[in-house]
Image (cartoon, rainbow, N blue to C red; front, side, top):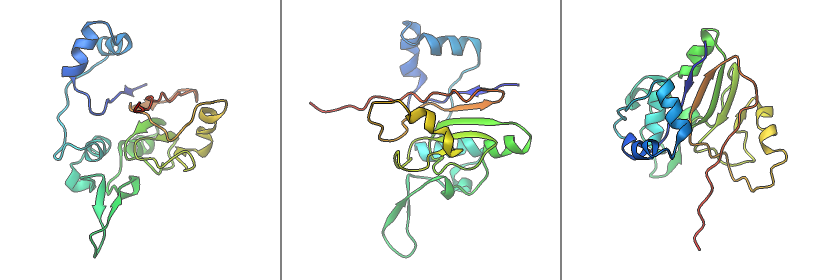
Length: 182
């Protein structure tokens, strides 16, 4: 059995629909026709860190503990950035591994630092930068950096791939070009 889940952060079918109908997104159009797609309700608050963590865990932000991108420090007004270790509950990939499935995870927000999985994990949004260990196993990042001449500031994958094996290790991470003011 193979399963592929693609999640697009911050984009709605209201925006995608006209582009798909106009043929601007042929690959996404094909995937939607051949697979299943639909509108999802977000979490409250509708913030990426809490929404993706709810998707990954199956519980609401009150149970997994991520309601924003930051959390208050103990006994102070200082805040700290959240990360995967801030999540209080197990994730879908933990349950899949326990059931004997291998997983491939690419670019899911709030997965830094990557955790050991039976498969691979390329952390997404909120990974600190190329010098950090944003991939598991660590050698999963080497093919993506070798031979690239472009500046890589951090993994910038805005899609979610959860794949059950058998797959190959030739997974590619497409980056959104950064916008520069002129």
